[in-house]
Length: 146
Image 1 (tube, rainbow, N blue to C red):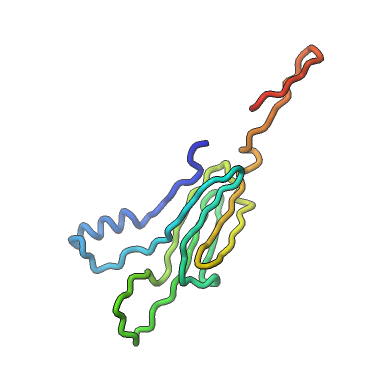
Image 2 (spheres, rainbow, N blue to C red):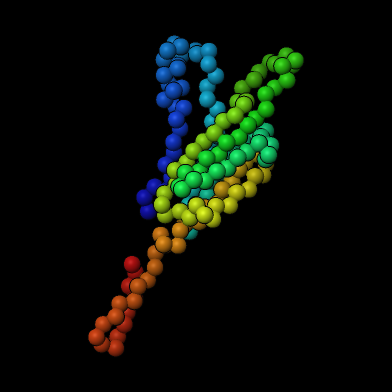
């Protein structure tokens, strides 16, 4: 089957333009990202997002038609600390995925463990291959793959 997942990142172009305008150094923070893996195994599609340090209560998962939106918030650091390094993104960030019509968005399951948000999306029943019986005038009927 063709690609079932399209990645949309509306901040990528904005980030590129900001780096060009600011001469590459930029005073604006780079948009936060959620690294993701996605794969298919049989009739199930799996998506995992890395969200270390994010409380499960700070994650929102919304599905509208075939668009999945994951929004998370990592709290700001204590301003009284003298930071030696602060590389992990903070604040609110989100990511949208456009799922193919062959996936059943009504039956998405989500779990969060060890900083990984795991989504399980089944292939829609109407997208699964099926056999169709062909009738003929004779007594012999045979099934062929559709």
